[in-house]
Image (cartoon, rainbow over all chains, first blue to last red; front, top):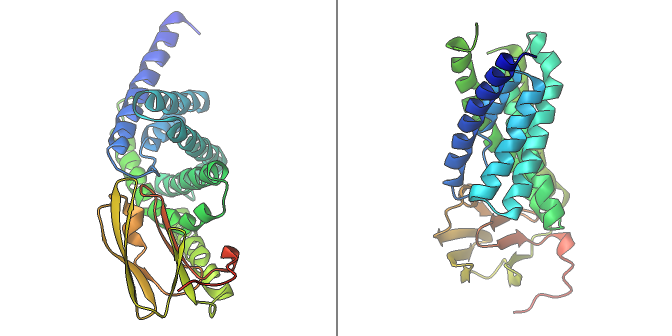
Amino acid sequence: MSIRLRVKRLTIDSMILAAALIFSYVETLIPSQFKLGLANIAVMYAFYRIGKIDSLLISFSRVILISILFGSVSSFMFSLSGAVFAYLTLLISKPIHESNRISFIGVSVMCSAAHNLGQILMAMLMFSGMAVLSFLPWLLMISVPTGLVTGVVINVIWRYDILKS
Amino acid sequence: MKIGDVVTIVAVLMISVILLVIPMISRSNYADFVMIDGEYYKLQEDNVILLEKNGYHLTVVIENGFVYVSQTDCPDSICRMMGDINKSGQFIACVPAGIYIEIGGRRLNVDSVAG
């Protein structure tokens, strides 16, 4: 790849990462242990617009940076787990999305649910008990509106996308 | 909004409802006591318990076989969704305060209830 393209890629990825950081920062203002996964807006956009590797790098960078800046070791573990699960669902849902049976909204809801599932599983590991599993139904219910919001935002961005050239 | 979206949303909601209902069905009649932050209380006796943990205050009320949190300064949103419980297996929890409240489940392995 030419130096020009590499610089362009770095710049665009960095901008998307910055957006992801802002989403995550907003989440740190919400006083809950379990996060909504708003940064997925940026990661999902990068996944479909830029590429799989770029979005993965953005996701991990976001987790690391936010944990260093605003979080603790435990929040890092939760965040990482959620991000991994969310990314896996992005990968899995790609073929379904391409067959045009599901829009960004559905993918978003799945990512949100996976993100929360990842957080619960990590909490089960860390607090070594089945008690945390009881949160799962509530978090799954919350993941629907969260996913809807994320999906609608992506739909809007996609329509007015300036990177589409 | 495509068909897959609707399917996904419905599936997620259904799974969450099923997960919610399972503990209620498996132990439905075994509702004798409630465990509040490690202490056991009888469900039949009306009671008001004031808890303070990690800097958060919770007021837990046992009334007519129902357990609910009447007052709290806990900011967590999960805390509020729990509502009032009366069936075995149901629980209320406040993550910031580290307080866990559950009704008479088998896994608590209690030999006797004091009081």
